[in-house]
Amino acid sequence: MFFSIIIPLYNRPQEIKELLETLTLQMYKQFEVLVIEDGSVNDAAEIVQSFTDKLDIKYFVKANEGQGFTRNFGFERAKGDYFVVFDSDCLIPADYLQIVNDSLATNWLDAYGGPDDAHPSFTATQKAISYSMTSPFTTGGIRGNKKGIGQFHPRSFNMGISRQVWEKAGGFIITRLGEDIEYSIRIHSMGFEIGLIPDAKVYHKRRTNFLQFYKQLHFFGRARINVYKFFPKGLKAVHFFPAVFTLYIIFTIIANVFCWPIAVLCNVIFAIFILLIFFHSWWKNKSAKIAFLSIIAAFIQLTAYGLGFMQDFWKRIVLKKS
Image (tube, rainbow, N blue to C red; front, side):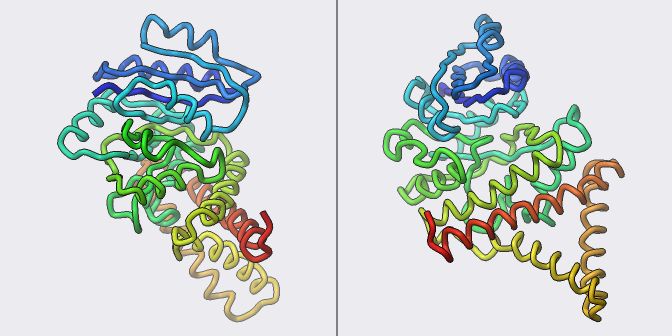
């Protein structure tokens, strides 16, 4: 199996340097790397050039179109039997490609996704954000979980597609706002086999502070409505949970301000939720500091997603604006 690794890049030269360093350590050597600069002002040309003696690497520069169409640009130029997509803010374990190759040899998948985790070198905030994105109390643990709710959808920070998928299904038709979910649903609807390779994990930095994290999750909430416009049946009850949680927070604040009796029950429920996150994160990360930050990250994640979801639900579904 020969792999083509596709990495869209936008103004993140230091990130690509760290990612490429991890690729030089891969145990499985049959791969090429395509780095596509998507209209960056702060490009990574010199950094990528420094890896030409360590990797089979190609560097392209194109006008800014967004990550979805930039991946398509890479697909069109890839030589591999299988295309692997990473975000530039990922670190790849040395056995990643070996795990994928061995898994596909024994249990073929036309497209796959893998989980993400926090690297020991990440900051406490990054580890808390990573926890909130994989916790059973926030996302339900459905990202990278074999027992997730409903059909598994690979996410573009860590996903792969066979050349046959590319030739039949084409590439991304949305460049932002849920492009990977739409692509996964479309691939599945065409009869291809999609699944999780649970050991093919990457270390995903995500955002380095809570403000950036809020903006990202607000965008994710809006993206879910964008995917709905393509696949209405893909919108499930679970996708409304962050919006319900956000409304519950607003209701609890109002109940406390006006001293409604139900405020006591609302506060108890919130206290239980906070304690569950704190002690679960403490157990998982072995750090009280990360556990405390995980509470903040969880509330930001749910409310930011909920507000973005409600914003575009109201605008694009209720008011039917484009």
